Structure formats: C-alpha cells, structure tokens
Image (cartoon, rainbow, N blue to C red; front, side):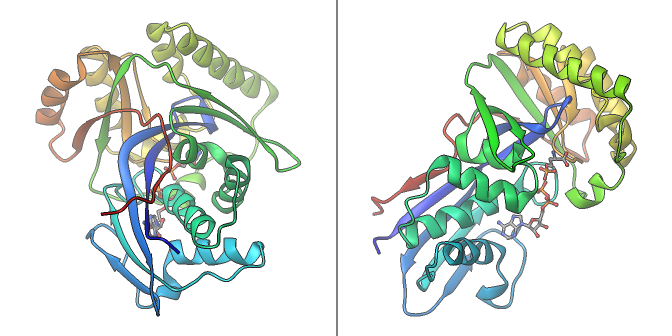
Length: 300
Ligand SMILES: Nc1ncnc2c1ncn2[C@@H]1O[C@H](COP(=O)(O)OP(=O)(O)O)[C@@H](O)[C@H]1O
Ligand SMILES: N[C@@H](CCOP(=O)(O)O)C(=O)O
C-alpha cells in the first residue's frame, strides 16, 4: 500500500429550515496521513481530538474496520497521523468528518473502489442523517433527502456569493442531546409551513436573492425554536448580526455554534465588531469548501 493523506472538511447542517437535509462544507479540516506498518499506530497531533487508550477504541479506526468488514476485507495495519481544526460537539460536523475519513480510509487501504453514492450511503447509515456527511463528501451546499428505502437523493449547489461567519462557543453540545429537545411529530399545518419556508429558501439562493434567503433562514419551524434555549446568546447574536447587515443567522447543525450569511466583502470588518461584543465566542470568517473529501497519494 502506497502512503496517502486524506482531508475532510467540516460542515454546517440545516442552515435554518433544512433540518436533516441541508449541509454546507466549510474550510476547517480533519486530516489523516497514512502509511503501511507492522502494527497499528495512531498519532493524534491536535489537542482537540478525543483521547483513546488503544487503536481499537478509536472512532475512525472503528468506522474503517466496520467498512472493510462489510466488504469481506480486513484492514491492514497502518501508522496514521491525525490532525484536526474542527472543534468537537459544536455543530460543525466533527463526527460526520470522522465517519467520512473512516470510510475513505477503508476504501484506500482495502482498494474497495467505492463510488460517491456508496460512500454517502454508508456514511448516512452511520451518522443517521445525510446533511453533514454529504457536505463532507461532496463539498458545496448539499440538498439531500433520506428516503424510506434508505436511498439518498442529493443535489449540490456551487454558486453562493456570500461571506460566512461562524460563532463558536467554548461549551460543547452533543448532537444526541440537542436532538432530544425536538418534537417527535408536527401538525400538518406546521409541516406544510416549514416545508414551504425551506422551498423558498433554496429557490431564493438559486436566484441569488440573498435578502429573501436570509429572511427564510430565520423562519425555521423544525428545530430552531426548540434549540434556541440551549444557546446562551442566541437572540443577542441574531440581533447584532442583523444590525450589522447579516442576511440571516442560524444555529449551525445541532448547535451551539451559530452561523451568519453576510453580503460578499463585508464579513471581515463585521467580524471584528461582533468579536468585541461576544468575547466568549471564537468568531471566524470561513469559506465554503467546494471539493469535499480529498485523497492525496503523492506524499513527500
Ligand atoms: N476526529 C475524531 N476522532 C474521534 N472521534 C471523533 C472525531 N470527531 C468527532 N468525534 C466524536 O464525535 C463526537 C462529536 O459528535 P457530535 O456530538 O455529533 O458533534 P459534532 O458532529 O457537531 O461535532 C465527539 O465527542 C467524538 O466522540
Ligand atoms: N441535522 C442534524 C445536524 C447535526 O449536526 P452536528 O454538526 O451538530 O452534528 C441536527 O440538527 O441534529
């Protein structure tokens, strides 16, 4: 096996009304450098990454091992260096990136020849929803549907002429905890309204009508009203971002990170003003990653 490296972007799911459907790939990366070895070795170079005692406990190894086994293969022993700039449990898809990395690790090490569709299928089954994993795999803004037969339909939007700010707090919020506050059922009128808001949101983005898209972003019915209470400065961040010209501000994924869309070219100056007010948050301007997972075999 030739040495290779993998990089997988972070992702922001939902973007307001697209609960479990929309995902936006952002330029924070999980990276793996992998080479064949006599025994397994995992070297984590980022303090953010979760501690482990034995390689068999490592989440990425487990996903890779399970993927290889599904295709009747055994994962060969590797030495793997892992780095990450994706904060854990903040609503930026760290678990989705780790799942995509594990699947790609097995794909490369065992020469599975998996297609994008197969990778998306495996990753969605592991994560439970396709929004983050589709963005991490494909890049861009993905619009997904997870069908009753477990197949996934996906469209990718590559044209977004906006600046993006993310507000990352110090506190973690696990996705499973943040899903527990959501209702099991919605009435027909709520579902119809929530669906129509999502439809207008995507149509407005396609028309580059960002004012309308921003208005729709902030009208979600599926999850934001229930999760807002889990985020300390939810209302204050939305209010100030709007005053400074944001099209719209939403919870990133299951939270607690928030994300704003701003007119192109305005993000950098506005970021500074917001950072001065919300000093407990790490506010970053991020770019959209339009590529998704990358594999590089020409290592120096
Ligand atoms: N690179 C990684 N290596 C190992 N485990 C990871 C990695 N990234 C994420 N995880 C696991 O996923 C958990 C976070 O998942 P989750 O609660 O869904 O939050 P999010 O995906 O929004 O960051 C972490 O606490 C950790 O258990
Ligand atoms: N659609 C999911 C997205 C979770 O994203 P994460 O980045 O918080 O894992 C949800 O809203 O629960």
